[in-house]
Image (cartoon, rainbow, N blue to C red; front, side):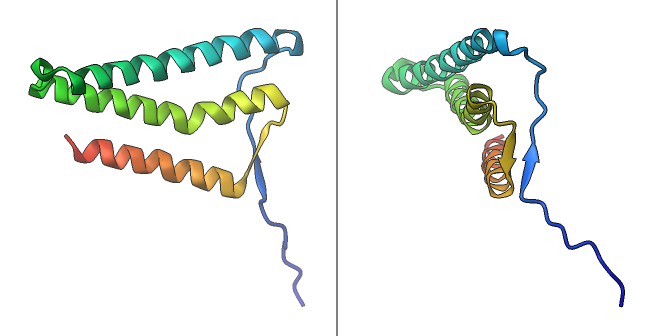
Length: 115
């Protein structure tokens, strides 16, 4: 009878940036600020284009879709990174990784179909 490896993968380790513990708060605040600026700025662009009828031209239509795509891509990956930085848990469950990849590829597929 042959013995086979019966191990299974239940989580992945995220190596990320090698940040010292004393610098953790500074990097968390920096990445959170960049994320919030990205989300709020792009949502503002999207809303202004939708609300102003003078901006209903093809160029601004493309720009609004680009802004919404940027918000979507950022919101798929950055919150997990911020949570990992704050909790010192450098792992992601297998199901979480699959879900993150699913939504990332879904957004990519949708954004490519509009071109």
